[in-house]
Image (cartoon, rainbow, N blue to C red; front, side, top):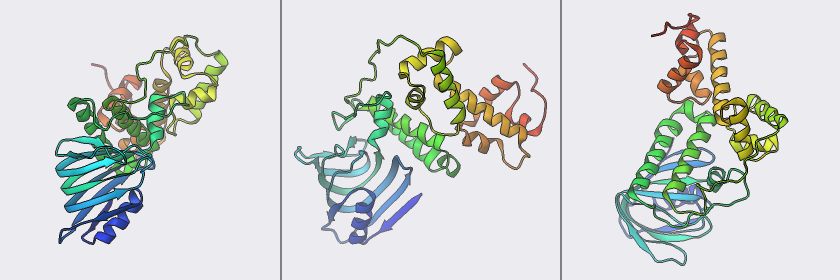
Length: 318
């Protein structure tokens, strides 16, 4: 975690400009106590911000989707260039501005969470075949429930992934968590994405393409791969790939990937000497929730992960 604290307005401006985009800030108050706690990956970051003073800002385009979730105080006179200024208070979530537009406003003794997301993640989730650039069509969520689900996804990303050194070191967990947040963004905000669009492609992949897909998954199971990447390697559409896995292997590409990763966990447990625990091995292969992982492992192999690591036999049934 990166922690910035300062009462020097010029230092705060320098930090904000380096962390977000070039900007100018100003204040008419005597004190300028600022605190920003950041957890981040290359594609997404979560900042817990406290500005215990009045501060105006004028910011250049961010180049990212940027969500603001107000906890206390207020964000006032806020708006992207060319739009009507608005105010936001505790419990309100909104996007600061489209990625390509500057914005301005004022912080009034506020604390809030800022989540910045690379637009490419939204494109990957909403348009896995590629070629479509997704844009959000409004700056407010469609409902309080949608905002609540998105807030919970951000909290999970922050507390269970980015703030956990072991999880944060796993590209598998980082990618999955970032795409989950992106999916909640698309569910919460109106956008150009067509999440419920139905494809007319009902043809499955040729057996050779399926073999290429399986080989790609097995060779790259330690990487954060997506259905679009697997389909691209197999030279078929995502829909054709999904149909082929369902019809010929009775599974899905991502379920097959999880099975491969589970088998890699088992191999490390069998070969392990006990110096590395079950949780660390499982997390490295993308299994963060140890309870769910343990249940899935026992269903697959008839014994607990701990029993495998200790070299014991299968756990008794019943």
